[in-house]
Length: 198
Image (cartoon, rainbow, N blue to C red; front, side):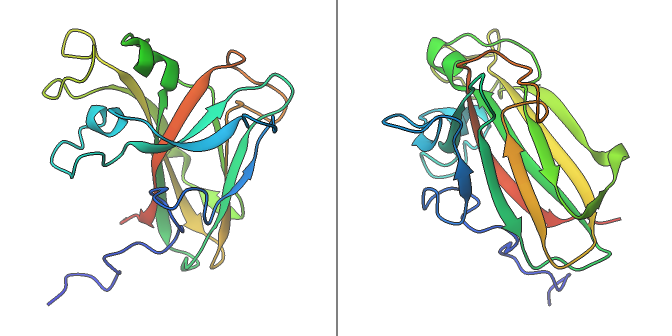
């Protein structure tokens, strides 16, 4: 029998792996036009550098790409659904620098982003943004144990207050401060919401 009653397939976010492009997501690019400042891209190697090496080829290579504007942030949002009020959940995702991935050289630093989950109670002691190196056992391009690709692993743990909540991801550190260089392109994926066991 099953150990838990939770479903095996998480249903809190639609198209969380971005396999269907922007479906299910609301995107507000800071810059529109021929080359909008938010899109979904296939980025070869991004999944490999996240250590998804036992998965089928290309797993983890699809990501949001945001290009930071100095005028306003890029915003990606979605309603988190099917929550149980009072229960704890974790939101997790990964960011990487697209330019560093292309150049084969990476800097160990925190990415200038912000995360907001509306209408929930955050558990601050379990929320973090960690800088982690790519897996030393899986070289890709110019990256290897002596030259890691630096990723950011983000976690927010929250207690649901209702059966839904609004998730908002931006490439500014706050509503009125970019906090990072103009033109920097960040990759976002592995976005998941799941029950968090107390």
